[in-house]
Image (cartoon, rainbow, N blue to C red; front, top):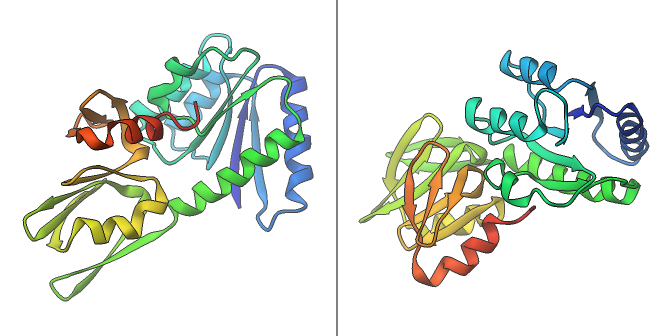
Length: 235
């Protein structure tokens, strides 16, 4: 079951989007649970009270509280890097404003079924990725860590240190070996000593990346262009 939120003050847009989604659902193996908001303030209140969605279609130009403001609440205040966000707008001029919110996509009005179908395929892949578990052996114990909760992994001598939302784990291993297991899940090899989850990158600079908890990690010179492109995906 995919939990989907739609927030747009234009009733024609919400009805059209719902009609397309329900049409696509018939050919999907997963059902959609869809909730619609015409008021971004109400959506913000619901999210702050603990409501969660796998995917939110969010109109940028909303009265009182813009979609960008709601996106910042999701990423910065709620520390939610898992919910996929698709911004909706009639103008294609917001890329830099949306960078730190890390949206999955940007939907331009008027949209059609093909646009939504592509988005839903990508969303399904990303949401399933978030459910993936990385299994590691540490001192004869098995650690089961959700990939989506790993912020970054660093190399320290013969050890690797896995930093996730709950703390850190130190175990013997090689960073290259771990990267081969997680590179298909949005992880970037930014430096010989660091692998970082793209979900948590808030800001990219010439020689470093800043995560949403203010941790700053170096980017090696050889990887700068590759990382810059990866950080810009979806804009």
